[in-house]
Amino acid sequence: MAKKETTKSLGDEMYARCHDLFPICRSITGNGVRETLKYLKKILSDINIHEVPSGTKAFDWNVPNEWNINDAYVADESGNRIIDFKKNNLHIVGYSEPVDNILTLEELQKHLYSLPDQPDAIPYITSYYERRWGFCLSENQRKQLKQQKYRVKIDSTLEPGHLTYGEIILPGKSEREILLSTYICHPSMANNELSGPVVTLALAQWLSSLSKRKYTYRIVFVPETIGSIVYLSRHLEKMKKNTVAGYVITCIGDNRSYSYLASRGGNTLSDRVARHVLSYHDSNYKSYSYLERGSDERQFCSAGINLPVCSIMRTKYGCYPEYHTSLDDMSFISPDGLEGGYQVIKKCLQVLEANEVYKMKVNCEPQLGKRGLFPTIGTKKTTKNICDMMNFIAYADGSNDLLSIAEKTNVYAGDLIPVIKKLKNTDLV
Image 1 (cartoon, rainbow, N blue to C red):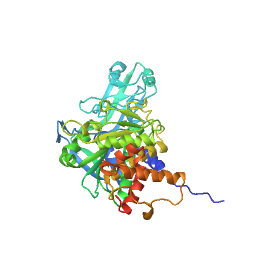
Image 2: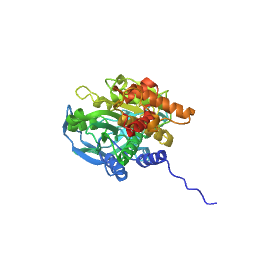
Image 3: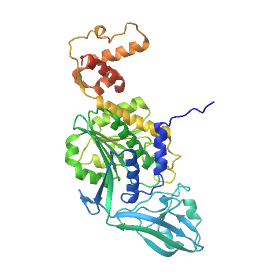
Image 4: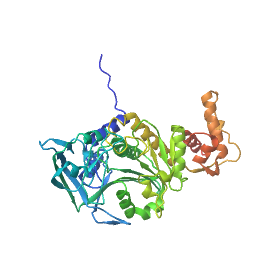
């Protein structure tokens, strides 16, 4: 019997992309970011890659010098690399300046970082805006260090260069925009780093395939914090004028939970859609206030910016023990986790596309039978469909948008989209 061919699921494709990107050492600047963006651009050529020179002013910030690293290690007196960047890029403190020195154990300890409460994990540590150097290692490994001299070598550069980001603009019927933002600045961590870009890329592919889009989509792949600040400094006027909704996409590849973090105002269209979709997708999702923010919603919602942006995640950053450690590896995410994250944001975008204020064109209850909208045989399913249609009609009075009608009638807004299509096709709404 011939072996049956199997089609790779979207979740499998996204997981494979995470696997490809996992070894790259990324930071807020440098060749790791460029390599990541070039990989994504090979999949979706719509991505435009931009370079912003070091020293460029962006609001209260300046683009820092560019950091690149070739190698880093700590070797014992026998020349054995006991801490080796090439084995795990989390071993180096991000933005470590170059060093080549011989140190005692006491001198070396001042530059080491570990987690006593997680003795098997390598922590993720950075020092972007103050020059220093350091190494990260597990607590168990640190305890094994002996009294001897150690060779410390960091082959890195920290000099004027560029900050790099990616951008996709997908025009819609309207100039009004929906923002999708994700970050590309962490080294080898799967959920905290790679789940966001690969899910965002898959969403961009889906949006690109649509024959019609009501909204224009602004999709950005930026280094966290400084990248979003730089991006806003370049596009603020247009974004403030046109942005109707937006989502930060991060930590979206695990299987543990779904999470929502509110915008600063807490009741924007983005918030309303996120809460509605999540309540039907996973009624046990966890809700967080803006006071618990920690990613680029800080910038998009900040005073003076105040865009309608919130965050949808699986397990929220900082709320799982593997966060910012080597334990956030490829085993922490899964194809199912990635695809679940993709589906919930896709549903949000579908609801946003359909969300309008609707008004019936006829007075009183319309005669549905003569338009072929009323079944001649009643079943449980047809009864539910007709009930949803009649309830939609009852509230489509020109004062309620789709979300309001869905909430009033206790129906998932996505289930009302086919109803709206039927009513539009018969010129009733």
